[in-house]
Amino acid sequence: MKVGIVGLPGVGKTTLFRALTHGAATQEARGAQAGITTGVVTVPDERFDWLVDHHKPKKATPASVEFVDGAPSMGEEVRKFVANFLTQVRSVDALLHLVRTFESDLLGSPTPITDLQRIQDELILADLQMVETRMERLEKQLHGTKTGAVTPHTIERDLMREIKDWLEAEKSLAAFEFTPDQTKTIRGFEFLTLKPAMVVANIAEDEVGKELSGQAAELKTHCEANGLPFEALCAKLEAEIAELPEDEQQSYLEAMGVEQPARNTIVREAYKATGMMSFFTAGEPEVRAWTISAGSPVIEAAEKIHSDIARGFIRAEVANFDVVKEAGSWETAKQQGKVDLHMKDYVVKDGDIMYIRFKV
Ligand SMILES: Nc1nc2c(ncn2[C@@H]2O[C@H](COP(=O)(O)OP(=O)(O)OP(=O)(O)O)[C@@H](O)[C@H]2O)c(=O)[nH]1
Ligand SMILES: [Mg+2]
Image 1 (cartoon, protein in one colour):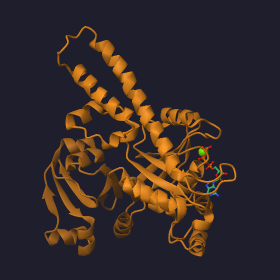
Image 2 (cartoon, helix red, strand yellow):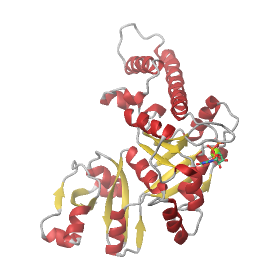
Image 3 (tube, rainbow, N blue to C red):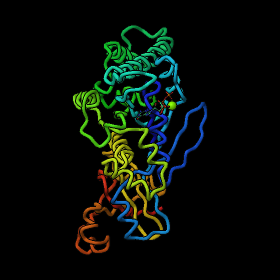
């Protein structure tokens, strides 16, 4: 799963990216094309840790999130920046809006709510451009179609008109209630205002470990009122901590009055904000956390593991992590009758441990 970090020039995107990726044990930062950088970060999960501890497997594969940092944008127009960012990372699954609430020598006093709005306006505009391009093409294809005729193309054109009006009213598509058919039509469009999003406030060093106040507190209230997941951190400090040796990190955090690095919360929140969850496969060869979107049937989980397993699916043995932990082991849970048998359409729950029977 990929998360793109967006924000105005100089808000600390690259600093946050370093904080998120540098300290992670399994991080593998890779240089990428056009100045963008991506880094893979493990999703902290106590359930996964317990399973690894319990099975002592040969291989342990945790869930992960890939963060994307755009090319530097200092001195650039917001519009140009967003356009660049988009061509670089159009395929991200979610957006992390980084907003500055610290005083900057270069940029002056923070104006977080306005800044967030500016980026959101740009996203709406980018979606609008996408719709207009699509409409032009559709009109060409519809040339010669009888008035009043209903074809897949006319249906799509009508939907595009509706979307256009919506965006022109400066509304995000997140609030547009698409029917299942419409959802199918727009799949593949990668509308930006439809991507799950979260907001992170980049706070000043001297605000760390305290109750949020001033602009940061106002931003939090604004996000809550708009249903946007919100977190706060000081990117600069977190990046410094992430670069320390592991054993020094904890004492540093304690001195700052912080329990754990904010990157843990942010990685977890990013995972949640995108509607993703984990199911596990656990045994002696491998313990693995798999990422799946909430509401998926078990056949999709099988497909993730291996297409053969999906093809030859017979049934799934499922017990949730909490049940297994309480019983002490999968075997005990099974003896107690707490492992359930499910068919293809069973909806996977977060934390399900499963064992799929199949025949090919
Ligand atoms: N005081 C303070 N400065 C910060 C913080 N985070 C970042 N900075 C500083 O802000 C400046 C810009 O940070 P970057 O991380 O390069 O910002 P960016 O968003 O990647 O900038 P562009 O890529 O140019 O758009 C740097 O000088 C950072 O050291 C912070 O939490 N507090
Ligand atoms: Mg940068």
